[in-house]
Image (cartoon, rainbow, N blue to C red; front, side):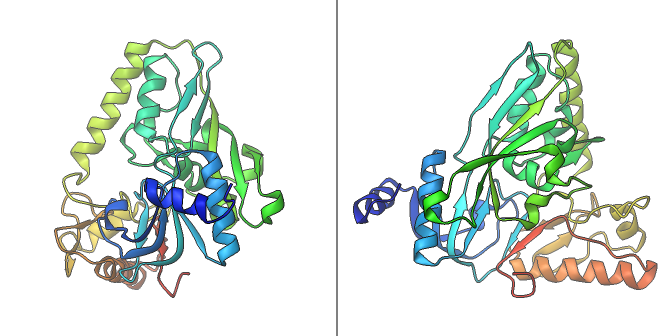
Length: 312
């Protein structure tokens, strides 16, 4: 824990904690202004210490992972931005099917490891450029599968607690109020540190690897992976598909500044080289307004916005 200036200085000197760092390289859209303070903890103890320090300083704390479902304002973020991408590691039990992973563990890495051990249940995750923590919070999904299908519990820190009692606790799947791209974690003060999954053991590893590779191939050939994006921008307003609604309005290729509705997949907005966060936000709003105007359907973004006055 932080015990004084020496501990703070040690984290500054080690690079765990930095000031005025551009967040563009911390999002898959490659946009975003500077963080007043950016921390990349290597373990849970550093997470706890950084949260306590921010609370003592009166800083707002925002948490990011791989930045794959995130739009950060051009003005940047005040306070502490806590990036958990270094918080990696996983344990997989081939006999029981139990899998535990830290919040920063990349989903594709975990999906491949599970498949190689004959553990069925995460093949859908191989093409999602996110982390375990982000998947647990957003109920990430693809190819007919989702995080909620196999997640049993998450280990969390309650950021609202005082310094004296700030610690980790467990929340079960049933307590997380999972729904399509939704969980209780999105509106609570809980910070995901780790997650446990129950997968199906005993499957043929070669077959699972074949299916996993097939899922990845399908995503990379039908989606614009050559340009920076956040993946799918809008939730599907079932039974309609957001991409089909947008494409039907002739909006593929629509540009505002350096942001473009992808000609490959209309539910992707890509950075064609010089986009700003404001370009992307304006294009999102434009697409929403057009779909509402023509079809009377409200498209809800999957992407989380940080630093924008209308949403913070």
